[in-house]
Length: 141
Image 1: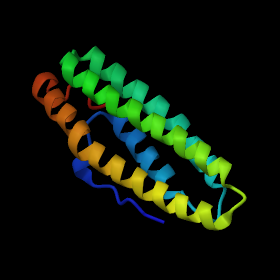
Image 2: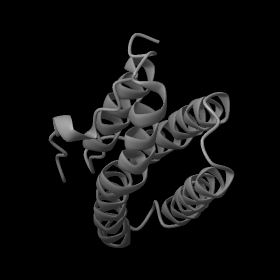
Image 3: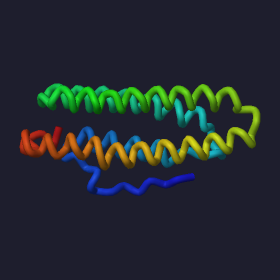
């Protein structure tokens, strides 16, 4: 399975958000055919929901421009729906190891690519705005 190696350019300089990003990467890196895939997917769904809510609350609290906030939130929502769709699909085919393996490989690549691009594009856009408008005053929060 894919192993995402953390890139320091993904850091937001907000400790709680960075810790959550690291935790998400850890969950993704634990997607494994030898373990309970559905449990890992459910963990990713649950933890993503918490992280996205925290990140969106931060955006609101620092007055991130509404159009950018709504765009970012929509990315989160589309990803949450995709996770739920994959979870349903994986549970539906869980008795067919050949289909399950294929779908887990697709899921693994999708999730890895989504997070990498989200960190590099959307989160970076927010981070740059945050550091330019807040000066990184909350780096320990």
